[in-house]
Image (cartoon, rainbow, N blue to C red; front, side):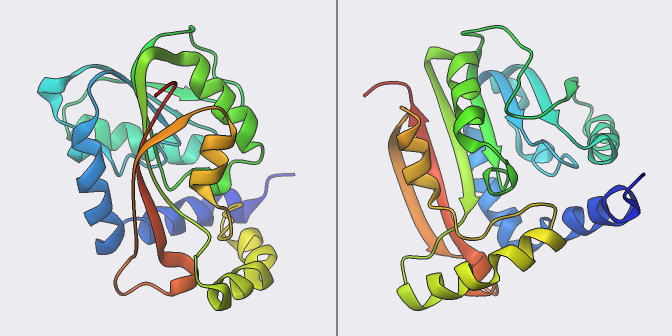
Length: 208
């Protein structure tokens, strides 16, 4: 049976909620840093596409499990005059070659990946040995009082937001996969509830 909410309503809600000014400002900080052959994991509706520096990109691949969001991303790519190779697949099973990408980009996606350790293993596999992961994510707050409420509300929030988890410690999960977080910045996004707005962004590499 088709889940009408997931198919017809959720993609548009995600596109709108992830396209607010605080999230857009964060995208503008990290996306221009992508270079070479690029894989965007969780490309969604293509909200990052306007911020890539085309002169720095050799080719770009966009992966997402949602056919509905990929349709939006294809329209965005056409509007931006960008040649993007799209893959309808999960991050846990990336059907691409080993040691292929100079840059892997993940923004506001790790919160929704069911098996994040497996996804990071796949990201490591497709990254070149001197490649890097560029990430920008929201997750667990360092404030105990906020984190308590993140844990309390996470199950309900996840059900209505496409599997988004608000209590993941993203940098720790990245490093537990064997990647090294080489640069990290954090902040609460302005005009965003603290439970949803603690942001991590930076780079991770295979070795120091």
